[in-house]
Image 1 (spheres, one colour):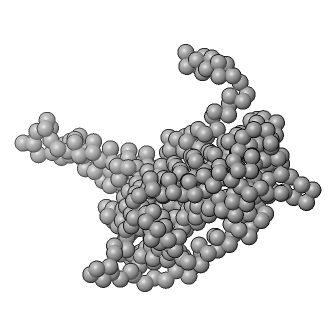
Image 2: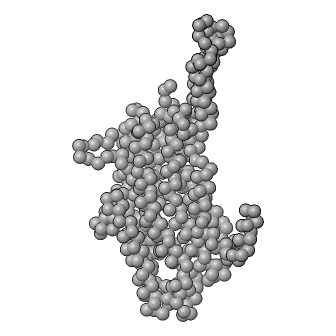
Image 3: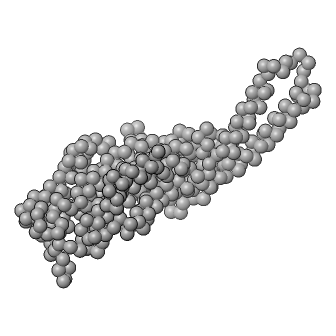
Amino acid sequence: MSGISGIGAGAAGIATVPIERGPSAPDPYDFSVVLGGPLFQLVRRAHLCGNALELARRRLAVISLFVWVPLLLLSALGGRAWGHAVKVPFLMDIEVHVRFLVALPLLIIAELVVHQRLRPVVRQFLERNLVPAASRSRFDAAVASALGLRNSVVAEVMLIAFVYLFGMAYLWPRYGALGVPTWYATPTEGGRHLSLAGWWYVCVSVPVFQLLLLRWYFRLFIWIRFLWQVSRCRLSLVPTHPDRAGGLGFLSMTVVAFAPLLAAHGALLAGMIANRIFFQGATLVAFKAEVLVVVAFLLLVVLGPLLLFTPHLSEARRAGLREYGTLAEQYVRAFDNKWLRGGAPADEALVGTADIQSLADLGNSFEIIRDMTIVPITRNTVVQLAVITLLPVVPLLLTMVSLEELLAHLLQVVF
């Protein structure tokens, strides 16, 4: 049976020049949203990273110590690391420790995980013959466009400018800083008076973290844009594919690669809420809207792009039911005429005939098409990612009930 074709509208402004590959050129389909860009090259030349994101432990140690240790030393010198000089001494600032010792390492680990898990995806489209020859040039253009955007110097310069001109000048003073005396700043009538540790925090530590986080949003944009461009190609799906997704089932397994990134966001949220509970008298219930919005947003960003292939899957399912329905009608009519209407030869035995097995195989194929999903997302994947995001927030439940009461409720649910 011929492949089922999907939507074929071309992406505007995308060149349709196939990727040329010289004898020693790298594989153009060995695609990673993580490798590349001037910042990656800078880290690599600093011997903190290899060509395939090796030396992860070295990166974790150096970057975390660069943004956290100076804060400890400078706040200790200023008498604000512990004690009662300020309401929030450094060692009691849950948010800053979670940000730099939990979330930041998770962002770095996510680079390695996403690189390894998403690297084979582009080639899977070709190895499974999902991209017909007529769409190959458009597919190649989508890969080349994603690689060009990933390596863009202008994009990363804009990210750095955004961090300092908008993130630190506007977002952090309004939404990131606490409104009580802390180890990094003391509120004044005109704003905040930064301590020596606060200057390092504002000028170095927070911008480094924000840049890592923004680079992840930029990579997600590249990934989503690539999937969108591929979804606008004509695809050759097979409705009887055992993955019950026309051959696109491998896409649903890619989203798990973003689990460390989601966990990092959950840790950031937990750290922010914890500081406001312990130092500003807030309650966990007051942040239920923020928790729901963060979880919904992250699931939409990670899972939403897979919905771009829903039109392809829906069309493949409809065409498969129609074409296999016609094939089944022809077969069962021939089977009926042969075995029930006297059309079988007198010397052909009914027992052991392959016709019955073929009829069963045809029925199984039809069932696969009927069960074919038009949404390449499973419920287990949604639940798994939501739990990973919320897991860092769970310990904050102890601010509402005691550990003994929480365990008692859990035992009642289980038993």
